[in-house]
Image (cartoon, rainbow, N blue to C red; front, side, top):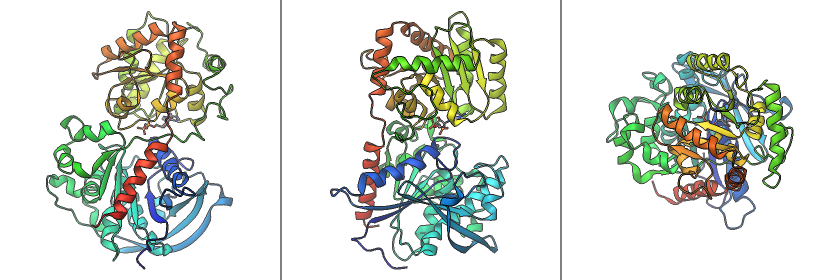
Length: 489
Ligand code: ADP
């Protein structure tokens, strides 16, 4: 393949395991479905910016929702894996103007979940996918200049592409969730023609698994918030890689995620009953009433409606939230939790629903339309995460006029202005320690402020008037891309 021409648009391959609107497990899907699109919008047609030819590639999971009319087959090719070559197909569709490739093969379609519970399935799926992505530029005769990988699932595309082409491809890895490093692939690198690596300050175990390998070899590493970029260099959040990340800090940065405001807009949101903006907040009341009716929340109807929308994972502090509500037994509150995941946490939430049937409701599933209605009708959102690299729920919540009660970590700390610092500019309430008593105290403070309508409305307006769009962050990524393009390897 020929060396890319300088005067052509900068070609970027953005790769991820999930992307909204095709398939979504968590925030990674929101980001993959919106950041490349935002970058296209930022640069194209804007004379001051380098033009971009950015394209997204994800696995064609069997659960992908893509209108058959809009999906076209591009090419068949063979991908080596272990000692065989497997027939593989690249399909193409779009999100707006953004080209999206879907890679299909038996290894990818045979497990119906994005992240299979059977870890070997997941390991095989993403090793194979990474190999297939590394061959995509050649298959399409598209000279990629920058590869942008995300999390462990696609981190191995970095060494694969670096070793493959005669011209240098620059690489960037965004870390959305460090503890998930892909250790399920240990001992399997040779199936895709890779070997463990040795790198200064990288523990030996790290040289054998995808996320640390990708971090060591990428030209740029981005954590999804400035605070998380610092946190991964500490023993508490570094998971044994803190010294390694400190040693490469000159090429580590933190860039906050943004929201796709076409999808998350209370004025036009098709899933909510009463659309509203910051100038007619009273309409939120109707959304709240409908939720109260639907979920038979009859006790304390005038109290604040607390919501939680989350994967049920130890990371998210669901246990702390449930305990805090129990601690506030004698205080009026109502709550709806939406989510699924850990059976232990699901059981704990179900137990609370049994204990407080007329004021606590647990909806045990993933339900995108319901999540929109909760953002539009809830008053307080609990986000007591043990760690939170960026977090989208607090940003969506604030954009919709919900006030977050959250732990001061990662992106939560970077995006929420705490009440304690200045009630007049605050957008939420923060607490420090991973401790249900601390959460109880700060939630109680929020419950006390809630009836002070002027003050509460002020918090809502502060939150809704914040800019959570991709504008600033997409420009920061663009600067990184351009620096990479300009740099000699
Ligand atoms: P994470 O990526 O760690 O799961 P984020 O806060 O970054 O957390 O993003 C979570 C995304 O997933 C948000 O868009 C949120 O609305 C959505 N979400 C989480 N749980 C559910 C659920 N049970 N039903 C619908 N949407 C959910």
